Length: 371
Ligand SMILES: Cc1cc2nc3c(=O)[nH]c(=O)nc-3n(C[C@H](O)[C@H](O)[C@H](O)COP(=O)(O)O)c2cc1C
Image 1 (cartoon, rainbow, N blue to C red):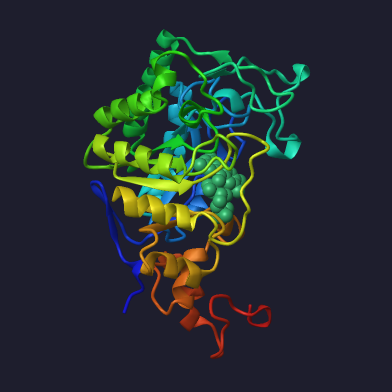
Image 2 (cartoon, rainbow, N blue to C red; image 1 turned 90 degrees about the vertical axis):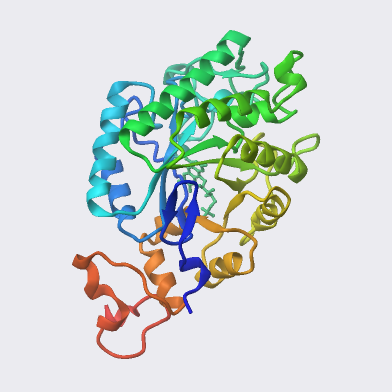
């Protein structure tokens, strides 16, 4: 019998051929938001690795909404053309669905790329003014964000809509709103970052749900729409799983097809105890209480573990990030480990387990002496 992990699933109007998702991963390599050859090679490789859905990195809806100078954007026609070139190339390599994660970094913008410090940009590093629900910095030393006025909030909603229109033109199958990891939508949701006295503070879901409704209106129903949410702030006075359930229910009511359940990111001090499958209980809680399709993510690496998360009903799909950086062929190796078939491009068919000389291969990787 085919393991459930390798069975198709319907997400809104599209069908994923299996339940394995390439999690969105910033590459910090773009030129003023434009993707380039790095993204072509990085995504090209991942696109024919057999994942049921390949999500591309957090792509920012405004220039000041980028996390770093190297982050991808979708705020100009140059961004759109550069991204279309990369996605069209991936389409020639694989028929599997491809999704875009739309994001705005809010007060976490204007920061250094991870390998240059991951802190706020210093005066000689071309920093920019960040924006947020309240003028509360992300952490000590970080830039104080400008508090968005109501009319500026409306402009942000429009920026998400414009980005959705561009995503449609590029031909993505999935749009995912980045509503996690302490970025702008999450900043509105969390009482730690939203201390507004107006309607956007009284109802902290107001702005994210306005964005969600406007994007739902714009994005075709025959494709899929989802959101990544942080189901725990891991900080005193922050959000917890019940808040995530309430938010997921609202997204479902608006017509969202799935949520990917992550956690953390609202403050540098707040860190979960990271261990294998540590966010799976959060995903299971959101799935059970909201009834929406759920992706689990976070330290899911072992194929048997991934198979069990789906087979046992904790989540409908699993998303992997570092697992795919380490092994872009994770899906093929997981299929071998779980005793099922994966789809290889014909050029790579001779890498299938049965084509290796000698009988005994390790469950999902040829031993070095046979390679
Ligand atoms: C290099 C890298 C870049 C990431 N960029 C994003 C991103 O753009 N959007 C996002 O929601 N999460 C991002 N993440 C988080 C991952 O998608 C994922 O949730 C996290 O790494 C946990 O999964 P893992 O244990 O399989 O790596 C990134 C992670 C890595 C390692």
